Amino acid sequence: MENESNKSKYSMSSIHRVIQVLRAFSLDYPKLSLTEISKHTDISVSSLQRIVSTLMSEGFLVRDEQTKQYSLGLELMFLGELAAKSDALLSKAIPIMERLNEQTKENISINIIERNERRCIYNLPSRHELAALTFVGHTSPLYAGASAKILLAHQSDSYLRDYLETVNFEKITDITVETKEELLEQLSLIRQQGYAMTKGERVKGAVSVSVPIIAHGQILLGALSVTYPYIRQEEYDDEQLIQLLKDAAGRIV
Image 1 (cartoon, rainbow, N blue to C red):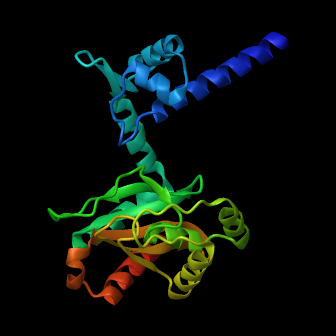
Image 2 (image 1 turned 30 degrees about the vertical axis):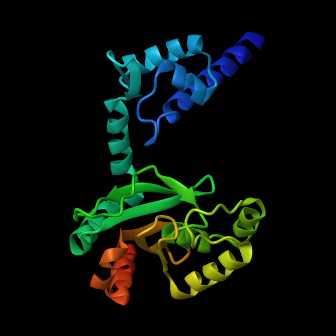
C-alpha cells in the first residue's frame, strides 16, 4: 500500500509540473528557452528536459532549432477549439457574437471570473483598422473595466465581502478606482442600470460596454462586452448600443 501511495503522489506531482510548464507561456512570453521555463516554474533544467521532451512528442510543444526556444504546439489549439465547440455557453454564444460583430464592426468578447480575476474566454476582433484589442485568455482585476465590474456587481454579498477584504487596488490608468467605497458605489449603480460602461479605465483611449449573461433570471454565466476606441464614440448612440448588447445576451440564454 505504501508503494501505491507513493506512486500516486509522484503521478500527481508530475501532472502539476506539466501544467506549470504549459502555463509558463503567455502573450508576453510566447517563446521560452529551457532556462527561461525553469525560471518561470522553479523546476530544475534536468527535470524539465524529460517533461519538455514528452510534451513535444505529443504535439503540445514545438522547438525552434535555430533559437532553441519552445512554443505551444498545434495540439493545444485543437483541444481549445474542441472545448469551445463543446462548451454549452460558447456554442450558443458564438453565432450571436458573430452577428453583433457584423452589426457593430467592433471587438466583441465574453468574459468570466476565474481566480478572482476577469478572464476573456472568447473574442471576435474589430473589423476596423484602428481597434481596441482583447485576447482570449487575457486577465485583469475585477475592479477595473466594464466587463470586470459587471461580473463583480452580480456576485453574492459574501463573495464581494471576501473580495474586498483581500483586494489591493493598483492604479492602472488615471481614473482607475482606488477605494472600496468608490467601487461599492459604482457596483450599486451598475446593478441598478443593468450594464457597465467605462472610458479609459483600464486601457487609455478605449471605451467598453458590458452586460451580464444571466440564465433563469439568477445564474450569472458571464459578461458580453463591446470595446472600441474612444475616438469613435460619437458614432454610437449609447442607449442603442446597450440595448443591442442586452438583446444579444438575452438570446444566448
